[in-house]
Length: 435
Image (tube, rainbow, N blue to C red; front, side):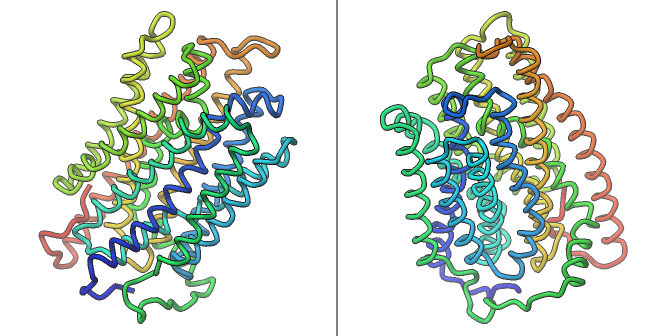
């Protein structure tokens, strides 16, 4: 399934740009609940734990579908999955726009999560086919980083539209944006540069199981999964649901100021992504050092914020969102592990496995924060206190500890596997299968 080497750069850039627009739209749909969580609690008259079920339903479907979507991706290609995923997200936003019942709202977020699950790894497969291997780490980081432009659209503009026009017009506009991008994908995306590579034989169930087993048996795939796990959840949960309420209810910021900090976080992600990509490309055998540095910095800044007496000063909150901004690019290192440790014919399956990690951690944290806020917060309709938010976000340290131990474990396993393979057969010195 390797693409021929002679690929017109302009064509590759165009196909990638349109596919990237699909991912930007997916991030917008995914994060649209984050800045509307307070309004959603009032609209549906629910508490923090019930509000968490909206995001949990969305992310649970996303995580559960990663491996099946990876198999479907290897079988049917990126274009079909981007079209189906985009249509599902548009349907979800339409349902969310008119929902007044909690059950319909949860079903709407499930549709968004299902469509979102098909998007990012489909774009990564396009990168693998349309760009040479030496450019892949940079293009993967650019895809993950520029996709966060969708979070900018889902912050200040969506908040302004929500408060100006109301709930239903705001989410109908979100659906219209998704439909526009869907038409762009239909017109501009092709799976591979050359027609002879477009068709793939449909594997039988036994072949699918063997492919998944081979991807899972590779320690580098599991290293990618735990890398994604340990680096992603803090920034993702902050952006997707609990950051906005924490800033408004816990830290006393205005809705506009809180949305502004979330926008700053996204802009910082855009700037930090290429830096992380450069470090990984320049020092491929030290990628785990970058992972541990990002994790340690995030845990350290959170410790200062949570221990600060009273509300944190604005400069400290800025520091928090800046370090959280690097979480997204850090998690993309997991996909680079999947690429370098697996052949191209199972890259969809391996990428799907890796993508489960961070979203499982995010689901656990979203639920835990909601439960702790209800247990530690005041009874009745009053918003959670700052102390309640402190206890809730302290749960993160359990997840960081688990993830760090597993990254260290599978880094060592991957190194042993790589050393054994080099001893068993001649491997070019310049090959990049590092840690």
